[in-house]
Image 1 (cartoon, rainbow, N blue to C red):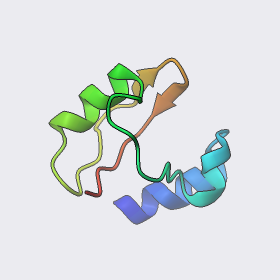
Image 2 (tube, rainbow, N blue to C red):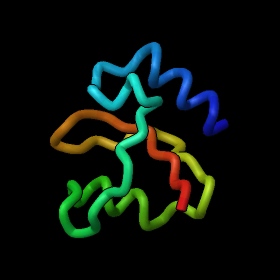
Image 3 (cartoon, rainbow, N blue to C red):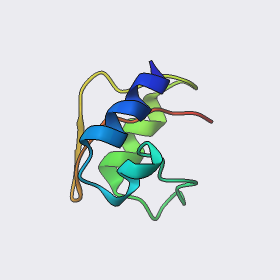
Length: 66
């Protein structure tokens, strides 16, 4: 499912990270949007959020890789 998410990000995302499959790189904890961090905390490794997460930057599907 994660690979499909990457492909969708490359073709549909309006974010600058879309061209990289939506990869934000390493997110610094405590510096990210609180709603984003909350969503990541409840995910297990390799899980993807079931619904988009709304942050001040827009809507996101999050794949927790590590």
